[in-house]
Figure 1 (cartoon, rainbow, N blue to C red):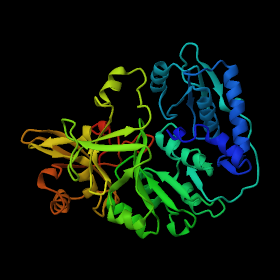
Figure 2 (tube, rainbow, N blue to C red):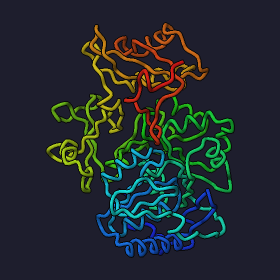
Figure 3 (cartoon, helix red, strand yellow):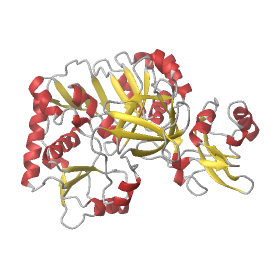
Figure 4 (tube, rainbow, N blue to C red):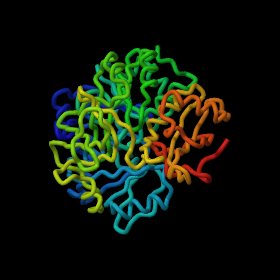
Length: 452
């Protein structure tokens, strides 16, 4: 996606600023100037070609974060091959299913390999890559921290591409750890200026024992996306002196929109995911596909001045994802205000109908998380004899104890309509999440979460 502006950003900056610091691998303290990073990408391209990797081939990884993954991704882009980063947390049967689907030519791992498809070569990262460089740390204007998983859009795109596009410095951590990230954000020697995370990661940072935002002296913006971010939490971060900037994107379309870096505008438009990004148009439509007026809730469609995404081995999904005139169906429900700011309500698939009224769980979750004793919550629709469907809230409390249902209902009554208030509150020890922090609502049930 970012390549539409500079198809080869590392090569560009290797020519413009060869001695500028491009990457640091925080696990090993190995460092790459742009000239060195480009040289390693060229070497990787040559070796991949020697292994007969060609345009259109798939090359998979099952690895924790490292600069080597970035080198591999950039090398494959130069060859026109497809980079397939897989979740290293998956069990053997899950990985095997994905590998059978994408049929990679090579799989890179930093551990014992999964069962390989026929004809697939296995290579250990440590035997393929140059050991890196140990140049002196320098100070630069833009320093990004990447500790989101590179098998997800957050790590692979949102955290990596901005510094490479701008010629900044990228610090790569193997994985997210709240205490470690707090230390790094507070370290003036690292000088981190920008950090992207999902709201759940931001909450984990705020609950860590070493949380001290007053020490984040070099941080210019804390970007969030990937999940709903309640306006109350955004305002809370602003009160801590941290400019929290919410945005919107998807795996298929990349970054779609973002808020401006203005605390005043962030407060004024609290809850918005901002304006459409470059070369991007957004339309909110009704069930018949007709554009809606500002303030009206409908499905969010996106159009780009580039080719639309396609799904691997899934023509039916390709067809279903596009409108007849070529707009991408995000599956998100939202609205736009008179100034063109986009507000998301929920995923279409999460909406349920109670007594003939549409209920959007994300709206209810936002209200519930304003309760001082609630740490996190997930709301789902369940069958109900009286109303057809009713809400069930899975609640994690900060104290680890239950809250009387009457107190929960009272908290909601003055904030949302009665039909939106969950009929049942289930108190649990935690919520099942994906590697990127999203709640896996399809797993919520009697046998998948531990009740209090």
